[in-house]
Length: 244
Image 1: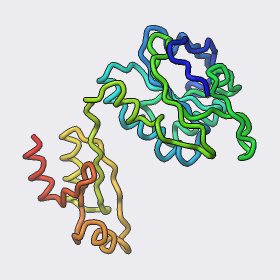
Image 2: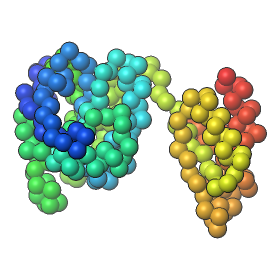
Image 3: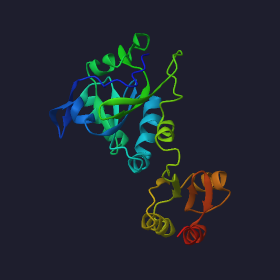
Image 4: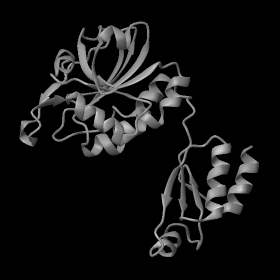
């Protein structure tokens, strides 16, 4: 793999889809006069890419913006239709998903690899880079190991390089059930406080066992913030008053 730090990004025109129509996006459109974080991965809808790599960049987008980053771009050697569907599936509205359909950009970056053993053909090696006004300021390239290593191109590593003191969005999850008035109140309070949250609705048949196994409690809602169990509605109210 070729480290391109200090060099200009390749001059390429990407063919993509915008509002169900064809569009051309040039390298200058993406990078000229901007600070851009780019991460590249082997393929849309693949496990690590869908479960971790793309979602975490999307989640940390506000912290990147607060640290001076104008845009976050995900590049993959996939066709425009696949990338458009993946964007919808992932709800990754904070990241521009860019199809490098012919692998031209990836090849000129020195990152095109042969994954024929997996039936993928030519794909991108996993990496990330910080680009300032079209020049590569920093690259994190995954080590050349068998398989698909994912050790250094993640969003947290890039954010720590750009701004070690960056404030990351809190990770909030809430266990709920349909028709629960206290669940509705808890979600409304979180929204009033400006928190984005992941809601985990529980089915009637398994709800009590799931809540008990996860929290040691018997009712919903149950709230978790950054891995810490806050508790139910009363506990959330107390926590909110302290956090205000």
